[in-house]
Length: 607
Picture 1 (cartoon, rainbow, N blue to C red):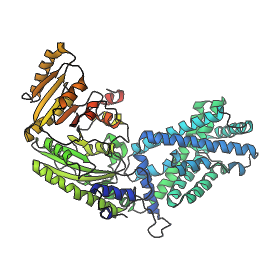
Picture 2: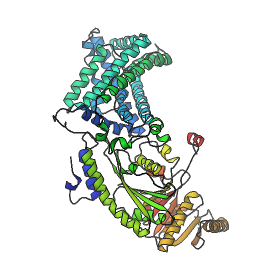
Picture 3: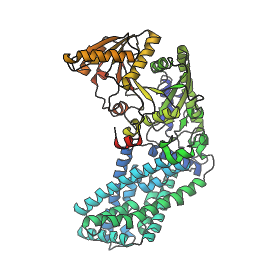
Picture 4: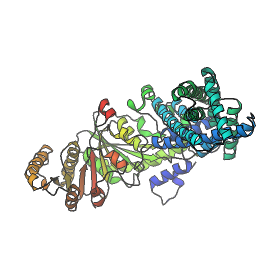
């Protein structure tokens, strides 16, 4: 265990928290509690949960391409098996000697394999810290990647001239043997194969070194050809090889061969290993894997329906979950921060907005993102230290909030996720507004675990994104073309006008002098509707939006920008917000996006 207070004394406080997490990694023990080179079942289970956290929170693209590599590596197994069979006259032992090599590449190399995923994600789901839809999403992406990789490998073997004529003939014979096996026999044999693979995962996390893992993987997967068992990804590759040769039809191959093998692998892995190993661990296993343990599990509805009705995943630490909003009618401003010591201006912005509401509360959430890879871990004592360290540095926020006369709350979240965590927090806190910073140093910059379209097409609340170059509210500039996002900027400007006596300039750009009169009429009406009738109104008829904003911003201290119809958050996270003025101007920038509640039809078919 590493105490944050014993880390580098010159480091920033949140850096010491991050250092504690970085050293101790993602939540699993690095050594046994009784015998250092042997783990108890609880400790093995905890290590599996730590790995499952990384898998269940990975982005679909990351999962798919890892699974694609794993599926293609299966080709090595198929190629070596048929080559050895051809060269040894189908000797039952000699032909199988190199069969496990592809699986060794996959497991030791950290690639995704569907049959491996019948243990870690299921363990999280049994603990009700991941939802059934989250587990099924993981399975679907990994299986699709495995099959795509297997298909590429089958094509390479069928048309690439990789196999000798003898090996090619043997490959067709082996594949034909599989497709001619009966449905229930395939299912039963595949169930035993699923048992072996999931068992390998369990034993792998009980091992302490790579050599032990290689031996376990080799011996276990050697049992599949020796026992005439079936593995779903290998079977898919074999079946597709026959299809590409023109000896078999794809649809019967999927329904009569691949499907029973897939179901058998799944049942064998889930029922015969995951459930059995789950119930041999103690009731304290969840307490060792999550802060406050069972008190933070998903509700039954969340467990079944996931993000459709609430959360789909429980982060390692979330101290805010134990303190639900006492008054849901209060105006709630959530401020996700990555460094409590250096992000005081972000809190000032949030408090300024909150101060204009009769009953408002500012909730500052310190988000500490875990590393994406690692096998070491920290236990309950270390998590307590991280929470205490975080809360100590969040205490300064109270003084800031009190100076504005608003109530405040603080909490700490430690999670493998980043961008997606913001949305879960906003939903759980019933936020009216999220005020967040954006720069290259923040954990939620540039990576999203789920589809950005899925996350941002239906925002849970309003968002303000602050590009911090200092907070000077003396002279505010609001470019506007109308719309709800600019209206949100106007509300923030009114708050600064009330608290800091700010001067406000409203800018409207038209395409040419012929449109100036109409532009002036629009601007006067918009300013009056947004209670900014006393603001300085400027109409620019150059038609160059960015150049006009940049010219005017040079004489102002704070620039407000509204989202475009393509959305703000998705474009920020994908680095596709092509407003050069946001980066080129020397003033701080506030970017606003109103909440969008879209119907199911709109979410299915787009804007």
